[in-house]
Amino acid sequence: MTDGGTPAWQLTPLWKLLRGLGAYRAAWEAHAEPPAYEEAPFPVRVQSEADLAARDPWRIAAWENPFARDGPASPFLAGEPMLEAEGSARAAPLAAFHAALGGRVDGLRLLDGTLIVKIEQDGRAVQVRIVANEAPLLAGGGFRLCHEHGDDVALHMARLAELWSVSGGPAPRPGWVRWARNGNC
Image (cartoon, rainbow, N blue to C red; front, side, top):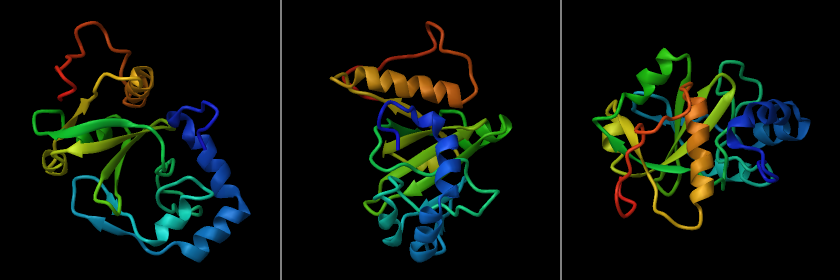
């Protein structure tokens, strides 16, 4: 869905289009099953085997009800590059922080155990893969972003700018970002 340069945070209009397609609605009705959830300070849905059928051709990681009006503003994307983070008890509580801004935080536990967190605010969305130490995040904390320098620095910076945009904050100023060494968080 985002091939051709559409930033992940602009998915709300694409989701509106997808949920209006008769083919998607029919596929959802044929494959989707009631989702299971984990205990967490924000909804963490557990991916099912049936959700795998949503990956192709829809490029989403789990079925979203196209008829729901109170659901997320966008689906979880499948196969998209995303920021990586680890849970942190010292970080601002993610769910409470975004709820105070009028945003929404949702999680998706993939079949392989990976936790994906999606933050939505004002029709924008960004996904973050939790790669280590998720316990503090699921206990009500936040996360710390991780990055190893390599060929994808520009993509990482674009996703970081998306996170800032979705979080409702101003653009980062010098001194706001602290860098760790050797890609450690």
